[in-house]
Image 1 (cartoon, helix red, strand yellow):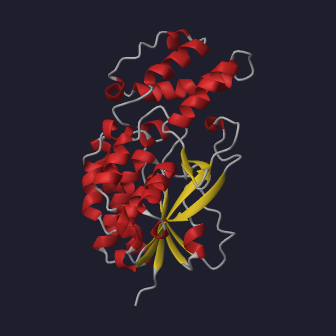
Image 2 (cartoon, one colour):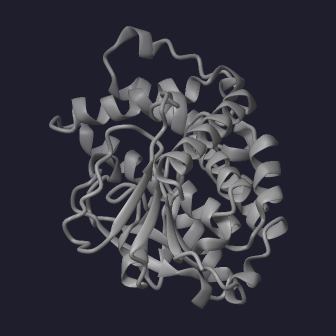
Image 3 (cartoon, rainbow, N blue to C red):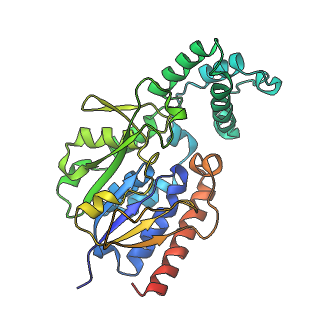
Length: 317
């Protein structure tokens, strides 16, 4: 009998399609049945839920039918964001942002997000930054983009109630949001990670946790769980190893969504980590995390499959 393993899935928005390719390889080579627990951050948590439920076909369908509108919602607060940027940025190019409604198609939201962060950093020391900071905080609470797309998926396509009956343990990580400080400037600092075992939660709480773990500051609004404000689970620890280790797993497959992320193995004596890392670039924050195009989703899935098959053969899993 094969040793039971854990599966840790990284966060990374649109790059999460890579994990579906990994999953297909685990299925094809008979390793899927050896996975006893899955833990994920951000999009990795959403993929992890589908894995725990054995919903590969649904996962494949979701990723091949995804679009920017589904990922970010039709309703958005872009107009307010553009107004804020124009008011607080000296760059003439930014002053001329016209705010077309076709921003999703033209991906102007990527440029807006870049400008917004630059604006805060540039003006935070000036007097007028007080009102700007307030605008930032308001947008962080509510998010620039709507969660209606993911809410629709969780409400109508994924049977979250079945998590309490599956044999596969499922964990999601969320970061506690810092108080009185804009989240956009707090990546990896002043945040603590909390892990939730989804099998033990009621359906509505599972839904809230999944919304929280994918709540990238500014992009989506924060979520409240047990009176505590949470944001994206991948900010501090993008590949959640700890809950799997504490659950007793001594061999874990860790799926990366970018090169260069180093897992600190010192806190996990006796743990064997099998790392699957993209052999080719699958995008940065702007060209990957925020990219939910079908063309690139298919490429990432294919690369995930190829990279995993190579590891399986090399390690004779």
